[in-house]
Image 1: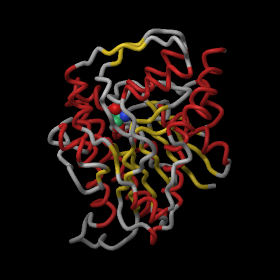
Image 2 (image 1 turned 60 degrees about the horizontal axis):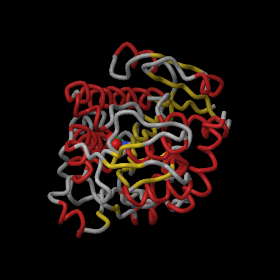
Image 3 (image 1 turned 180 degrees about the vertical axis):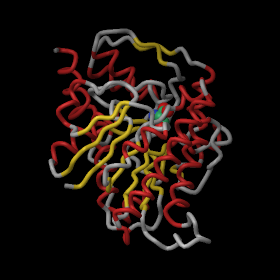
Length: 336
Ligand code: SER
């Protein structure tokens, strides 16, 4: 059975990805997280390793397995990274480098190239001003790559690093030319899950607003009503990871792909939330630094390369995300 490694297993993407991977039932899942594995995930994984992804002892432990596929989800998100930039660099960059080197060694040992799925982000963009953000429309993968946050810098560097480690590592040595690693990255918008809430991100206002309303709690949104970035329902995020992982290598014309779904302002999200939960109390108390981060991210992404190369298309636009996924599911979560 193919062995799949998921780092950051307890995180939001980890939760949903593990549920979907386990339901397919055709692989052995090794999960890693800093914290003990969440109770609801325990039955889904074959091996759980608790520890730090940037710890060489942990990497040596993983390396014993003939892993063919890695979903490297462990990271500090953007707000957490601004609070502790040195730790963010260590986990987000050194942790990724250690796993890329490990993946190369495993691929060399087994003769099977390791597919390495990397969640990148709209935080790699750095729009120079609100005017440019509002007038530039959907941005391609190759524009405005001047991130202002530690997290964005970490991610855009690791995108490059993954390509280098797949194609050019050791190019002046005997190792050159062997296909041992196949790095693929998705630039995720803000993800919204009905079953979990994020920690330490800056797109968190959307999920926080929805989860607060579902619990009948007031919510003070930390960005202005007009703040706009791309968002996506979590099932589409998981679908994108699995579809990109499954895409034939010869169909891929780039290693890094934008994926989009819908791009609402905070006020448009609030209005949907108030439709679903009449009486939901939503106010605005913009946090200057978090607002500046959101202003620096693009308003929309051009995902035509993903559509063309591996057939990307989201199942959920904003209306469907609310009506068929978020509202019905979230109501069940808090009714329990
Ligand atoms: N959701 C992430 C964050 O807010 C962006 O990728 O940090």
